[in-house]
Image (cartoon, rainbow, N blue to C red):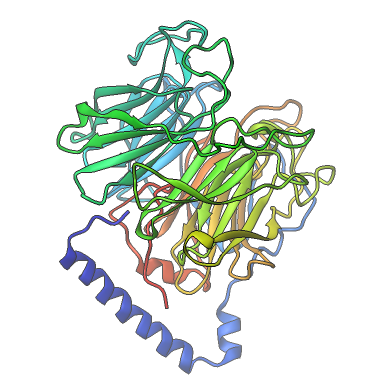
Length: 484
């Protein structure tokens, strides 16, 4: 989200428009043959069925790794899974099931750890705003402290929800507040208030059970936490809107029943959000931040098993939904599962106002076969701020990283890839890229087992992204940028 002052925004616009003018001039004077010859090869090896060896790195020529910083103690165990990421200035913030890490990425080719905070409680989904950091806890704990231990959700006193940290000193974050939420907080989405005095957290959670006092079925709602920026310790749940008053998808042999949402991506500048809600995909009007309402709802009873996450294009006219078939722990990038399951679904947004509808156009899945020991399925990615095209980078767990173009909604195509071989060729170990995001010129990937990867993309189709700079980035709080 852009929170720069007006003069700063004007400066960004002037710099970007000047650069765009130079781009148009260069395109105008280049011959078609020279433009073609200057383009590096796309994902030339992308369709190979030759699986790389253990830890062997392969990539298309236009995407290369420039750094890797392995997990450090006490987060260096197999059980300490790396999770989501956020960015602010020269820092990257990375969740881990045992806490979170703050990286200094002022030199992307040489990232350094600024701080590690131990605070167990999966998944530790993470966002930042100003001097505040928000962390999701979706595992039942004995209390709300960072020293808590696992405790059954059937015990009324057990705790799950949101933790708030003061990160004004990046080297020494301070835990300042907790907010308990129904069914915990699997993920959360930060939505700035229009008054600029508050931020809202749309908390997604699921899996209610009758024996859980704080997570009773039916659970067709999200929790909205309001955080006053000048008094963050007053943060509290102020609404629990029911998104499925008539009930969600009831479930099938191939698809999950809707009992809450997994993730929501907001596009605050357009007053829109897209929800991935287990068995349903939804489009929301969030003009009233405290009362989001569903304006379109879709289901895929043939190919989608678990609606996991969403990404808008910059124009706000498309949504990419991901299907986390197998819950992220299964080998689904193979010929047996095929190209339309465990994939992305590309949807156009048609119509206007309350008549807007999500209309299916196509599926996208990485065109490489993975080993049976590799968990691989569509997971977290972000839009690359390319002018005039719809291109995103995406994590596929042990399937690696894919850069793909969905400008033509009906015919998406991969333009770059990078992957490691399996963690093991004899046993299944949960690993691979959890979140892979583009931020200010580089791609950052939080690998579950291998730590922080930094990659550099060199492709004529994406170089205009270098014209765009954000002061911070929470990917599920999607910012807009200049376009043609």
